[in-house]
Length: 287
Ligand SMILES: [Fe+2]
Image (cartoon, rainbow, N blue to C red; front, side):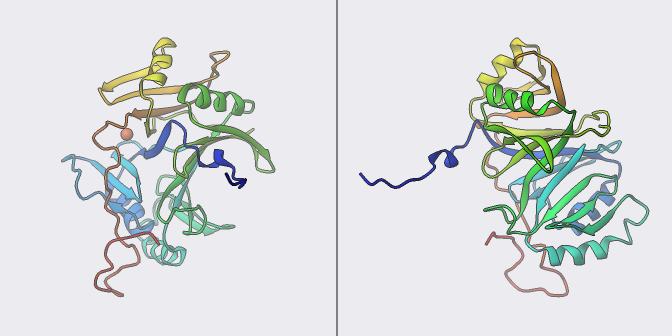
């Protein structure tokens, strides 16, 4: 047997296989379309139609779910990867006029383009070299939490959700980094600043061991919804030792038998336009 040295733990995936969507209410679906589709360059889901004021927007293997209602705000920022930052800049320039009376803004930052949605959500848009294997998608979302909570939050995800979670402490501060499967993270960043009230936005995750976390959440009265056979919800992230609530973020927890697990999402090539049209390049394929 060879003596090759590899860190086999680097290949491990925990119980969470994907952070599938982030749900944010928006007051105006037309402006949301201009921002997420025309500006960021994502793709409106062509198949799932609710016949009402709901739009799903595909970003690689992830989605934004946008419901028309009072604007919700992610407390922190969301990381998005697009195939080309140059093309992104062109698109953002183009949509600026239509979004002029909103909070929409964008600027260059170190390694990404800082974009603010029409209702104040911070989105950091990265190019395709920033996250291994991600050419289009939502590789992470970072949420602000109170000082002294990162360790307990990491414990919650490790012990209850059974997904790898570590605490990092560096010049960016202290945070819990939670694995959301293949190259995705949910980050809880401690801040001394004020954190806005939780307004009900949510995330959806798919997990392999569906019943284990459910048993704990049921026993500790943490379930907020028994949605159906394939989904339940919880909202409080608690310290498993003390029971203290450390943060709030509604999780739609879905099993791997959920009909939409591994759904093949349609993604267009956002670099393809009327003005530079090339036959056969409508769809986006990574690489
Ligand atoms: Fe959802």
